[in-house]
Image 1 (cartoon, rainbow, N blue to C red):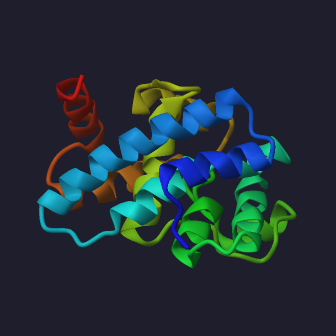
Image 2 (cartoon, one colour):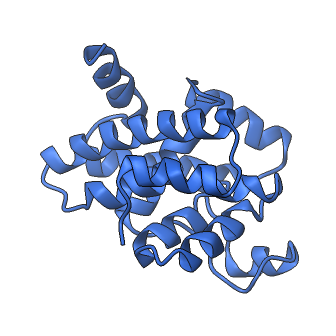
Length: 183
């Protein structure tokens, strides 16, 4: 099952997500859909319903933990609820800019590869990096945060660069321009 926006919000409420998490997920969804529509218009095949649902639900695991394992916790919740595996996987691998199997094991996470691979997964991951709380933020701010926390900045930059190649332009600028147009 791929939930509608209303069903996704109902799942958040069922599992105790607060308003801050829900508003963040709604904003990430707006960013993800703007980017996805641009990629679709440039000829890329993708599933907007999967992207919308995954973006809306990407932080549902934060109702259980604030740790990096919230991606896995969210995936477990969504599997239990019978959601489409594409949504589950996008929620699982949105953390950081992806976590390799080896890194996951060293962090005590279950033995999964948490690298976003499909276009849908990469869109949700990237959109999350453009939103702080429920406000758009500069991708450079996220790069600086990754540096401070000693996260894999190369993987983060490659996430953006890969989307740039597929879109044919800077995905951050594209999203900001598109969202400005819709206001």
